[in-house]
Structures are given as C-alpha cells and as structure tokens.
Image (cartoon, rainbow, N blue to C red; front, top):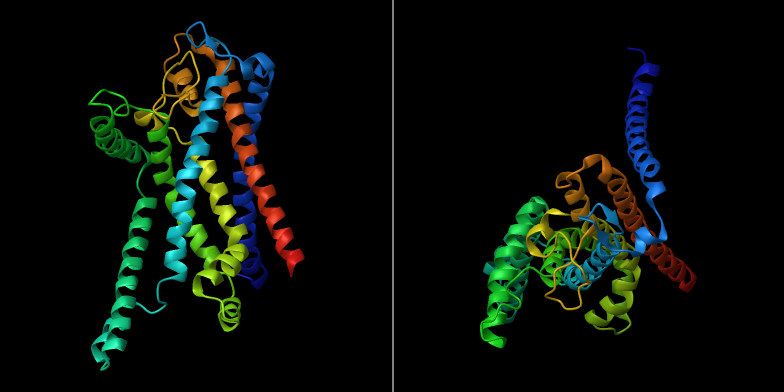
Length: 327
C-alpha cells in the first residue's frame, strides 16, 4: 500500500461516514418537513384535538411538553450542578486507596483526622461517579417504571396519607411525577458535562483567588462557576433536548391520551407531543387520514426542540461574550 493511500484512506472513510450520516439526516428531516409543513396553521398550533384525534390542533400537547421541560429543568439542573461541584471542587484529587495509606501512616491525631475526612469524601465521590455511569446506561422505559413505583406509589402515597386523609390526590400519574422522572433520566448528562466544565477551569484561577484571601466557597461561587457557566449551559441544553423528546418515562408517570383542558395543578395529567405522535402512529383507526396530523406533530416537536436548543445556545454565547469582555 502506498504512503498516499495510507494517508488518504482514513480521511476518505471519515468523509464517507459523514456523507452517509448527513444524507440520512437530510432525507429524514426533508421527509418530515415536506409532509408536515402543509399542516401547520394557526388553528393547528392553538387548537385542541377533535373527532377522536383525527382533526383539530395540538396546543394541549405543546403546552404539556413545554411545562414538563420547564419543571424538569428546575428539578434536575440544580441537583446536577451541586453534585458536580462536590465531585470537582470538594473531593480530594488523590484516590481513596492512597488516602487510606496516608491515614494509616499518619502519626499526629489531627493529621489522621484530616486524612480520614478526605478518604470518606473520596469514597463518596467514587460511589457517585459509579452511580452516574450506571444511571446513564439504564433504558428510559426503566426510568418510567421507577417513577411509577417510587414517585407515584411511594412518595405520592405518603403525601396522600399525610395531608389528604388517604384520598387519591398525588398517588396517581401527574406532571410533577413525570418531571421528576425526566429529571432523574437527564441527571447524568448534567453532572458529567458540569463536572468536565468545572475541571476545565484553570487551577491558577483558584490558587490566585485563595491567595488573595477568598474562602473556598467564595472562590467557587465568584471565580469557578462563572468560568464554567458556558459548559454548564451546554449540559442543560443536552438535558432539555433529551427531556423534550423522550416518551417512554411519561407513559407511566403522567401523559394522557387526550385531555379537554390544560393542566393547572402539579398532580394533573398532561398531553405530550411525543406521546401524541405515538398515539397517532399506533392507535389511529384510519392511518392515511392521520398521516398529515402525524407529520405536522413531528415537525412541531422538532421545531420546539430546536427552539429550546437555540435559546440555550444564544444564552451560552452571551455568557461567553460577557466573560471575554470582563477579561
């Protein structure tokens, strides 16, 4: 094999793979846009389904999906960021085994106590990282069953027993439980991306802040977090994209086939765009008649996901611009 061929073969394979993926994506999106653009109208976007889901609009599904994503972000992102701060900023860089050896070798009680604390933190960090790695590989349908068992039957049942004399109020599918389940599903994405963003902050900035007399928490809040904010927003964007498009978890925890009104309480069920697509594709009595509705709904779901991503990207670009200006 000639040297030119050896150098060109990997590049050619990469270009071929990119071309195949780009072509498939273009065909997929082109088909959806071509078949769904004619269905889009003001009545379709603002109306409710009619005639057994064979006519009308999809506004309840748009509202339910947006509300679900908002609640999921409020519930999941702070927990993910706090967990990442613990993993990146509050745990020792050394592994638990070396800290255990240092603790055993330490002669002074104060030094031994300090190594013991660091050893416990290192063990906790290892356990959390293992849990996050395993959580990322769990199928989404399992998260739905987890939400059904833990949030609805266990937490919801406890709330009903404590505040509603056992009356069925929160021990049933609702948007709150669906949002918490989706927050658990997207938590690994937020934790991993935030952890990477925090670790990418130069260590010299932390040392300079500490040298000027700032405490560790002041350094984290005023120096590290602003520098890592674009990376944190990237994780939030990825979590929002997955949360808006996942269907399996909400099947068990809150999505409804059809609702005549919008959800007004946290224990109300809601309509979801992804679930609406599933219903139109599998439960419709006339597939040919439902096709325009199906393509239109898929197109709206894609547009909503892209719009949420665009908002996050613009916000991230604005934060980066401000950081650059501040320097």
